[in-house]
Image 1: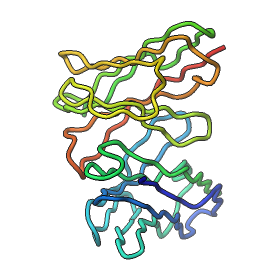
Image 2: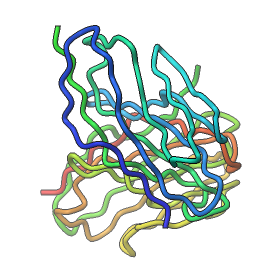
Image 3: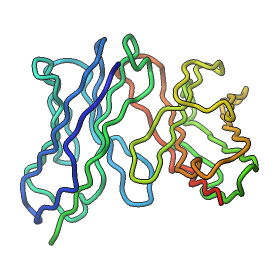
Length: 115
Length: 114
């Protein structure tokens, strides 16, 4: 079935460092890909999305490109801030494949940014 | 902008009791999803509704049931609660079931079973 694999955390960076969180997926259909962020004690917020191959999603300085050839959707940010400290989830939705319409999440990567 | 509303935000129950969680989707969203997130875990899909009909079912125990009402709000009913049911329960809504449309999550209900 469909699945998402993302790099294990926690990840600890200094402020203004470059961030990469790797995400790869397995899907039977044509999935849409998402990154969600969860701040402590809060719900999940959509960070960015891509719906087809070579699409680039971007928001708040974060970017991710849908790479079908490598089945990847890595999250990047050029300069992280303390306020970016959170748990980041990669997810897919594959309505015509294995996940139907619901989201399948990776295990999450906890990011801590130190001043 | 209106967001997904969940109530209650926190709930404490004893083993074998029942619990009802409520979700009010964003207006004009026709699809509602329920997820369960255990401590330090990723959210797991439970069940979804499209236009008030059950759409898809995930890893939802038989002790749980859910429905969507005429005003589109949804309720998750949980009976014979077990310690392992302690988790964050999220409701999400989407403007459509179609591919590519993101789901908007509520703040969650934290259920503690003692």
